[in-house]
Image 1: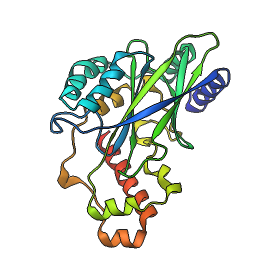
Image 2: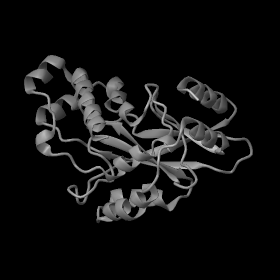
Image 3: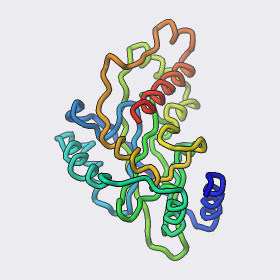
Amino acid sequence: MDQETLLQLAADELAKRSLRYREIEIFDYVPTQPDRALLCQEGSVRVFVAREGDPLLQRVRDAASRRNGEDIDLIENAIKPRFEGRTQLSPYQAWRLLERAPVFASIRYGGRTLATNVFPPDDLGLVVLDNPYNGGELSPTHLTLVEHRQDGTDAGLEAVALKFEPPLTPAERAALAQVPADQLEGNMTINASCCDNATFIMWAAMAITVAVICALAVKADEEGQQHLTDEQIRQLGPAATARALLDIRRETLGHVH
C-alpha cells in the first residue's frame, strides 16, 4: 500500500464518523532530575493520548503539578515498559488498526491541525506526540482533541499536554513578550521530524520507536543551545524573532529524534 492510498483511505474513514470535541489542558513542566530523564522534551509541548479514564494520564498531571520526582518513576516504570520490544508496523497493518479502532483523533491548536489519525494500539494504550514550542505565550491556552467515533460506540480518548519552556536570553524573552496577540498561535507548531511523511499524518502505530525516544529524551547540553544575537533580534522584530526561535526548536527536536 502506497502513502497516497493510505491517506485517502484514512480520509474516507474519517468522513464516515461522528465528531466529539474535548479540551486538552496544557500543564507547565519542570523536571525534577533533568540530567536523568524528561517527561517532556525541552522546548516542546508534549501530548499524551490514551483511552478515556486511563490512570496514566492522571499520573502525568500529578507529576507536573507535584514536582516530587514522580516524573522519573512514571518514565522508567510506566511509560518505558510499554514501548520496549516493539517494532514499526507496515502501512497496511496501521490502516487495518485505524479502520477497526472505535475512535481515533485529530489534535488541533487554534486553526492549526498538529496531528491526525491518532489512536493508541490495544497492546500499547498510549501515544506520545511532541510539538516544537519557542517559549512564548500560548493563545489559546489549550489544545483540542477531536474524536472521530464510530456510531454507537461508548469508547473515547483522553489527552493531557505538558509544556517545557526552552532556555531564552533576556533579549529573546523580551521579544517574545512583544509578539502581537493575533500572532501568538504561531508560538507552537507541527513537528514534521516525528513523522515519516510530509503531510504531518501521525500514524501512532507506525511511530512506536519515535515515541519511546521522545519518552526517554534527556536534557540537551546548554553549550549546544542555539540563540539569536541581540542584533538579529533588533533586525527581525518580535514576530519574526518568534518564528526564528520556533525554527530553532524544530531543528533541535529533529536532531533529538
